[in-house]
Image 1 (cartoon, rainbow, N blue to C red):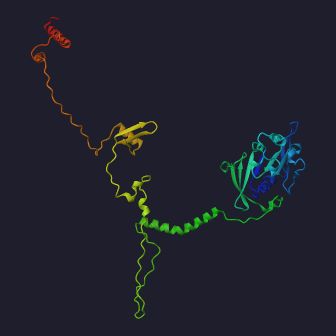
Image 2 (cartoon, rainbow, N blue to C red):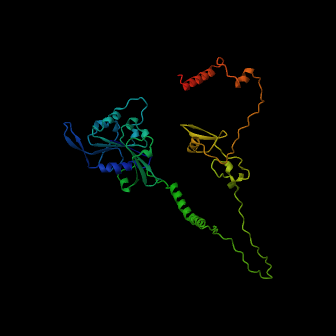
Image 3 (tube, one colour):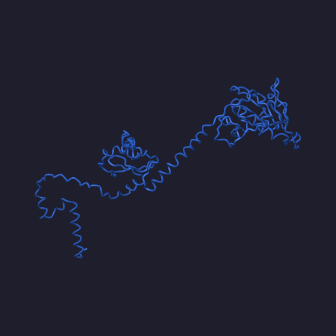
Length: 390
């Protein structure tokens, strides 16, 4: 497996690698198989470039080949290669450039029985081919220059350090005895410790709680009991003792307490949100002149039903508007609208032919009206049926 450890300078990357990853591997063996397929155990051997490491290891001294560049030539099964500041050996490559042989061979490092622990400040400073091969990413984040840090872990290389996607997050405290096991490549300079802003915020909240809690309970108790809240601070009492005669002192007059002017801003706060005309300042100007009455509605599958009054949308729910459509309910406040009277038209008397006036007295001629002919024939047929002729 390839494990990558990142962190800012002085965060404790090398210290964490020695304590959590190197020390547990000392004296262990790794199971594997030889060229004939038989199961064998390989001794865990540590190869590293950590300066002044006091545990059993083989030093990668660099040399002409920089040591790590030809790891695939000297590494043995069971080897654990720990390399600090790996960006100096495997820096980022230009796009389209050929992958170096030592980096390309990392694809089969598991088949060789070799594991890597690579330490750097940022994964973006390392050859991008390693990003796809890393199976574990640990980021050490120091807390406010104190001897403790938070360690985030991913099961892949997190280029953007997405803390929310980390599979684990754990605190880690520096151990002084581990500092003696190696020599840091940097000078240990003590930086002034500052109390984090979050600590100040918590302390301020605690102080405010103790100061404001009595006043809050006093106000709540007064509202529940219905008694007016009396301020805890009392005005200085004026002594009513008489002034001795002959002292020349003027009698002290009682000082009236100052009256606090009302806050005019309250008058302009609307009673209903998003409706500024409901502010108390407009109560004298706001007069209701009509009330909403449903005149019509529109329904569709997307917005439901919307009711209107004089082409103005009413603030009604879709369910209430749908009920109105199914059957308009009786509205006792609605004034019934009477239809307008029909217009009076002048009666026109038309002269009718003499034949029309005689229709009441003479039987119509069968030849002139076909419908009347049908009626006459039917009448004759009925009379014949009654007489028995048919």
